[in-house]
Length: 271
Image 1 (cartoon, helix red, strand yellow):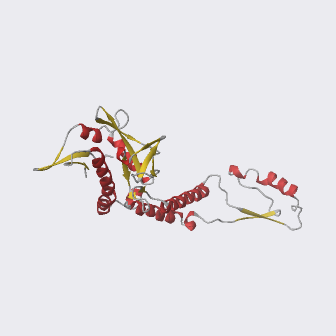
Image 2 (tube, one colour; image 1 turned 180 degrees about the vertical axis):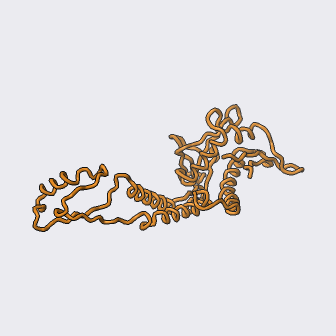
Image 3 (cartoon, rainbow, N blue to C red; image 1 turned 90 degrees about the vertical axis):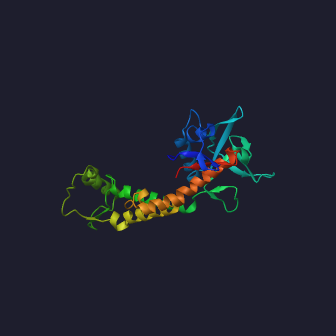
């Protein structure tokens, strides 16, 4: 979202940058009065990566014969068509021909190539594992957490009666949550603490790091971006060349295909 989008034109002297209304619309003010290019592009990429499941739609609005705005279409879906077009786009009770909207796709769906595909089952599995690890960690580190205890009593005592056991709890154990030490008759009961598995025993740290590395590999990002390890310039440059440039080209080609009539012009995101 921070990279400028250049409108380029192929000339006899090489490709040159063009400055006109279409250049400003896409690079500076795609949604006048609402969002700049940075916010607009952030929405497109975030939607493709997340809830759009590999798809993001934008509706170009025309006023006085010119493009006036490029409005994001949250919640829009691509649906199979029974007509000449392989699909149509449904949004807020209206349907649009594919030529009427900008359809950004992260990957091509195997069964329906006209539809995008995002990161699915594998990522959800990792997210669930991270959530479970976090829940265990919070439980074991909570101020209210108390290790389980066994209270041994003489078999000949009258603690087999539930009322007697409750009376004992109220008399001797009621202030346990306040952090006060228990004061018990030495010959009455025997207390033994059962030590639970610690965070180290459960390998929570190792599991979380492994899951984060899995997330990084799914998205094609170097580990330092998710907080693991140190910055590696080679890994970062490889990330830009593969993952980022792939998304950039997807967006560039859709903008060029749908917004420009001049075959010598094209949009290019500044590398």
